[in-house]
Length: 160
Ligand code: SME
Image 1 (cartoon, protein in one colour):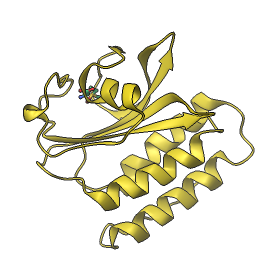
Image 2 (tube, protein in one colour; image 1 turned 45 degrees about the horizontal axis):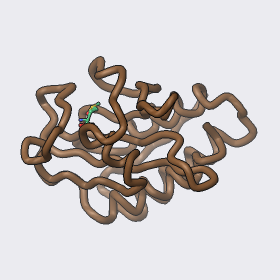
Image 3 (cartoon, rainbow, N blue to C red; image 1 turned 60 degrees about the horizontal axis):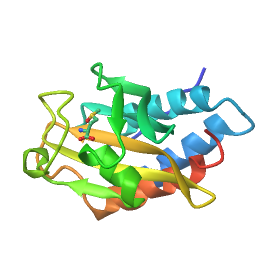
Image 4 (cartoon, protein in one colour; image 1 turned 30 degrees about the vertical axis):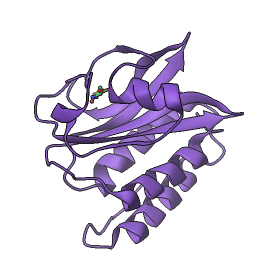
């Protein structure tokens, strides 16, 4: 049994340090990317307060295809360049969106979502997937979240 006990009152850099450490331990030595994404989605759900969706989209034949996640059922395929996820995939850059309703082309999967962060996972210079997290609060994510999720993405680049 895995028993991680995140303390949501921790400062974000420390919370993310612990999340990345837990993800490293859970995915260590496991070659199956789906299993690793599934466990990391579950960890994000346990560690990150005030979110309503967290998971992965994988780049397959140039499109983003839904991967393991926690939250409500979501859009299955997103074209590169479309929405927040497709923008992160097309640019290779983290997208921090304080108000999803103000983001041109935002794709609404869960009507409860108000803010969002999407971080690309890059292997050998190419985007292979993105990590997407939604919150029901506006401006939920900041630069500490971006740095923490980017560290998680770097860990996962050769584990998914
Ligand atoms: N809002 C995303 C779509 C994915 S869902 O949030 C899970 C987007 O605009 O790309």
